[in-house]
Picture 1: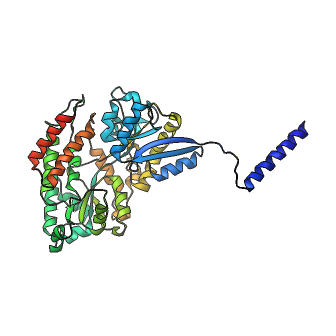
Picture 2 (picture 1 turned 120 degrees about the horizontal axis):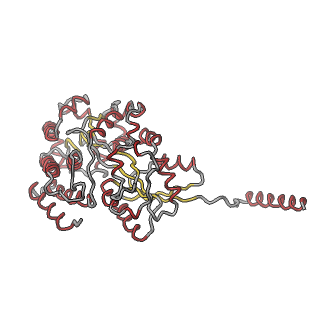
Length: 428
């Protein structure tokens, strides 16, 4: 009996060896495929490969889309029960998805709540108290500027002195006017002759969310009541941005386009309102400008743009594996590593006294203390309630400001247009 087993074992080994020699591998254990729907670089490449290295039975399948398309696909998938295992949700959509907690797995207790900024954590908590998302990064927001261009146009270059130029947004606009008044004749003519408009800021339209996020409220009261029409903070953000668009300080180049990439390389503009994650983008797109950039404080004190949550839909096929990945990827240790590699600023406030973060400097940005700059900005922000139709309302105000930018509407007419569109199309 034992001899027969030995013979069979030997024959089996011989068959396996023979198959290997002719290029046929024996069957391997199937990997568990964890599907993730995302946008941008919410899941950074190192995080994906490192997790798969540490967990060889897991295959992370990431489907990336544009931000709006990603969330519209999620809405459709929730209705059809065809969701991924993990869904990345941007904060401007968090109010919408918090209104539908039944579609999500409760992530309460998955990670220590006290490790995170309280207002970022709250963006992932549904109306019924269910934790539907764990915070990824916090965008933060500061001003990235070209020192060489500032010097050329008669402005100071030291980051503290630069920040002192614009304690307010009106002062920022005034600084921009000073800058463009000193453009060369060729630069001024370029807008007509070459369709390349030189300016102080890449796109003044980016001021609207920056100013809006510095207030205490946006479009909603905490009870869900719409206040966009009568909230002075919204009107101030809109009119100030419209004034900047009409002042001639902006290039009108849309961000994340080939013209924008070329503009930051060629010095078409001198400032960008930059969340922490955008600094890495600048480094990748304008490599030859290393050392010419620096980072100064945002007008008005503190700022934020962007940020996401990772959620596990209730219809996920692999909820346990999904939660394991989220717990690892959003731990404070991995958030710190992601910041060092890609500049995504951690939502984990437990790191804000860590010298590995606060002491981080970036040679590309003239050794600016990036960590401390963004820590200070994040701590200045107050929580703002994000309502159900936050993103849609953002878009209507953005469309109205775009009409101001191209001269189709005055600021007052554009405001009335936005209010009319929102009243017509938004039903909470």
